[in-house]
Structures are given as C-alpha cells and as structure tokens.
Length: 135
Image (cartoon, rainbow, N blue to C red; front, side, top):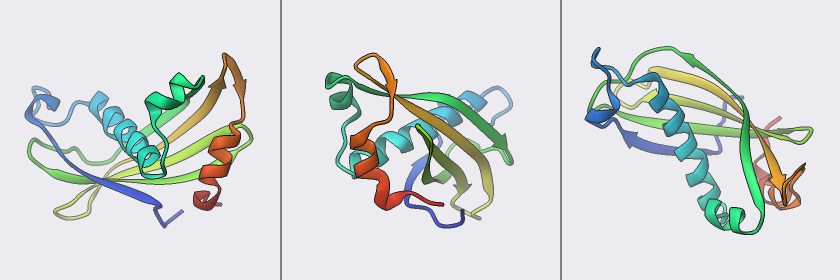
C-alpha cells in the first residue's frame, strides 16, 4: 500500500524522550493510537461515544519496525491506511520525520470489535470504513 487515507502532524515533546535523547519506544504506540482516534473523529465517530453505545474497538495485535529514532522537538507525520481481514480492521501506520521524510517506524495494528461484550464484526465500522479500505 502506497497511498495513505489519513495523516496527522505532531511534534516530539521533551518528556517523551529517554536518557539516550531519543523517543522512548512506548511513545510510538501513543502516536499511532492518537492517529487512529483522530481518524475516527475525522470520519464522524467518537471513541468515547462508541464505548457508551457498547462498541469497543480493541487492539488484537501490534507490530512495529523501528527504523530511525525521533528526538525532542522534531516534527513528524503519522500516516494511516486501512483494510479489512475477516473480522479484523487492519491499520497500516507509518511515521515519517517531516524535515527529510525519513521513515521512523512502520507498523501494523490489527483491531477487533467487542460489541455488547462479544467479539463481532461492526456493521457501523464496515459502513463507515468501506470507502477507505485498501486492498
């Protein structure tokens, strides 16, 4: 997949870095999660409202390949693709440093939906995401 359906620009904050002066690995999960939540908002879905309605999208599997570290103050863009695989919604999320568009991470996030306490496919997500699904 080369085209992205959504992107979000962000900037590294000092407290996200470790003693080595680079972004701590766990913070990349925050960046990509924030990107998914902002994508949901952009397509008219509220993560909090979904929960109130008994729809809980959850991460089932996450893989991250770390390519180049980010440092404090650097700006970056988090980009997202989406496809469906059975009951899973698979997000392909990559982060690039804005100054040179160097690849920072490449990740794949497999999400499933728990609806009213049961693992199910989401008709709402299918209807909302179908125009965005990449093959």
